[in-house]
Length: 145
Length: 145
DNA sequence: AGCGAATTCATCCTTTCGGGTGAAGGCTTT
DNA sequence: AAAGCCTTCACCCGAAAGGATGAATTCGCT
Image 1 (tube, rainbow over the protein chains, first blue to last red):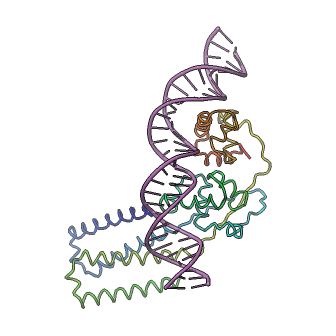
Image 2 (tube, helix red, strand yellow):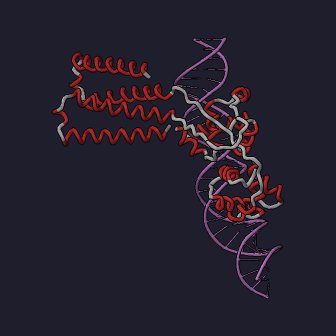
Image 3 (cartoon, rainbow over the protein chains, first blue to last red):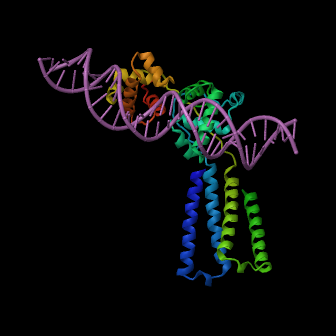
């Protein structure tokens, strides 16, 4: 979250700079105000869409590999029984990929503290003490692949 | 999709109307251009974010799939190629079971420092940075079950 | 006997984890 | 409106993990 704001802020600064630059360099004021506003609107719409995408992007990596597999089915009932939320599950997935809390935070666009909260709750719900055990147990319970 | 575009268009129209209205009613031109632009930027950023969310929140289906390897066999050649020693391998195994360094030390009857040395060397040889990654990579390489 | 690898342990230091607590805002249900 | 859960974030603190380096001992092999 903090990172996203920072990036957005930087982009904003750059854009403002560009606008002022254009304003003084090419006398944009001479152009119609509507055109000016339109440009700004378009740019920020795109920026907004980008931010929106970043904030909700979820990489769905499909591992394709042959071999007969006894289909792993997403046991939602099991998740609910343990009271694991969607966000916590996302953290669990990334955790199982070997990412550090900071890396998970960056990927989910939340703060490190948030990830720590989620992981702590995860450990409680999975009744484990460490992330390595959480990964193990999650695999045993077929919560993750 | 279509609905989103329509709503976006309507919102756009309303905004334009509002802007023109403000412009003529309250002489917004007298306000600083920066303020005017800022408002537009903010509004369209929000609109963009909203649109981005609408366009992507359709359905994030997570396709998970397990891939189990046929029979696992101890590939000693692979171990040697990586230069992983017996002791390091033992540490790796216990590590993969979710044990802490201290627990591994107790189980192997060595000191904590020794385990840390082994694990550090393991990380170097497996070219990873954390134990979770080491476990992953070891499984990929079929070094462990 | 000697060389090299493996094993063991240590110290110092930094980073990462994890526990505990509090809190704010959003969303849902009652 | 109130209650409850989810999500987010913050702060503090201690434990665990990891990096760098040095060193002693043992073991296998020539």
